[in-house]
Image (cartoon, protein in one colour):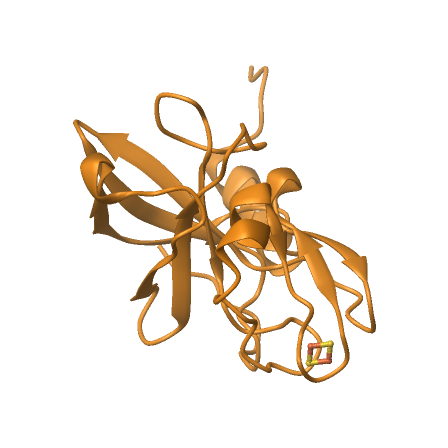
Length: 157
Ligand code: FES
């Protein structure tokens, strides 16, 4: 007698969810920054997973899914989900407020306070979000939500 899904059923559901982009894809944890290094609106760039350009930034206010003492540290892939153009990271005031964009290619903008939600422009998908975790005073990337631009379905782990 069983009250829940079998391991095979669970693995199948997880695979379906990951393919649909609703589950984070696992990747090896990667140390990205120390809390003391972070300044509101100043991005820290890194690559995660593999060679995907990504950035981490501390916002001036809390963010959904944010980490750190004020839940205001977030990270995303830098590639625009529309056609992969690099999103601008030079406007510290905008970044600190949680807005990313406009994309130089077709003007899409995104709200980092709400997991990279698409706000304006031709993009129809949200940003690929890098999941973060605090380990002491260090911020680690531990996975992603969404499909990296240009990649077929990604299922790690
Ligand atoms: S590539 Fe960014 S809006 Fe088209």
